[in-house]
Amino acid sequence: MTSKQKAYIALSVTSIVWGTSWIASRLAVQKVPAFQVSSIRQFIAGALFTGFFLIKGYKLPNLKQLKWLVGMSVLLFVSANGLATVGVKYISSGLAALIAALYPLSVVVIERIFFKNTKITLLTFIGIILGLAGIAIVFYENAFHNHQEGYWIGITVSLIAMLSWSVGTIFIARKQINMNPYYSTGWQMLIGAVFLLLLSAATGNTIPVSSIPTQTWLAITYLVAMGSILAYVAFIYTMKHLEASIAALYAYINPIVAILIGSVIINETITLKIIIGSVITLIGVYIVNLSLRKQKKALVEPIE
Image (cartoon, rainbow, N blue to C red; front, top):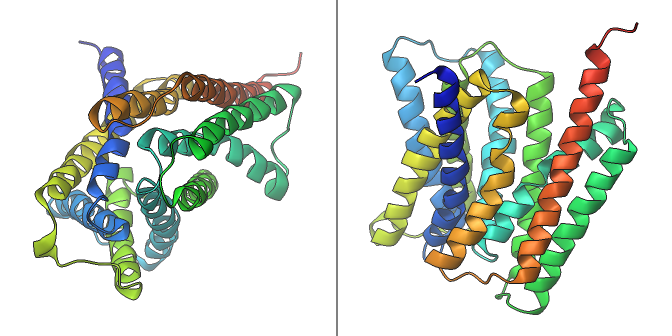
């Protein structure tokens, strides 16, 4: 089997596992506070990542690296992952996954407003409008028909989580450190776990570890083993062996997996409008990404 074939298998693993991780998160937070769930997940996964590399002889991060790791941890694992975990307590896993998939749209807008280095072309504009129109259809269907108490809390924190991921993505693209990406992720998870634990304690929103039910432990085990380790390793592998545009396809598959599996396993509502709205949203995200690739290609092509 060639590296490219393995990469396509890895892409399938990433798409399916990260899609089902939304359902696992929703199951995990039913009886345990969300920040506590996220903290336990990040601590276990982070300890496994960093422990592996420390055993291999990797050095501890220096002060400069540590500052960068703390910043990325707050954006990606405290605000983005932590708040996304809070979100699935109040909204369906499919809707949460769909909101997360909007991050390319917010990246374009943030880059344009604050850095002036991204053009809002007609194609980009059409993509943004489609993305927002699609998500509006899903919002409407959920908000006025089948939503639970705290629905708008879930929407709000999920949007903040998506924006945090967008900002973190921009910072990573602009400033990186000379550090193994897996090792770096492990430290970010560990640091994030500490912050999340402090947040849980500060809000008084914790329960004794001995009181955590089996269902939550099983969900956390899945999130750590499959979502934080297997899927992430598979994603890095696809990024190394496939074109970025192909490797990014997971972002369009995740919400569909979350919506379909969520409707089967935990009986989340799925209607024709939700399906149509989801498809329109993902088409919009695809068009935005397409417009960005065209802009990058225009920058590198020689002028004849």
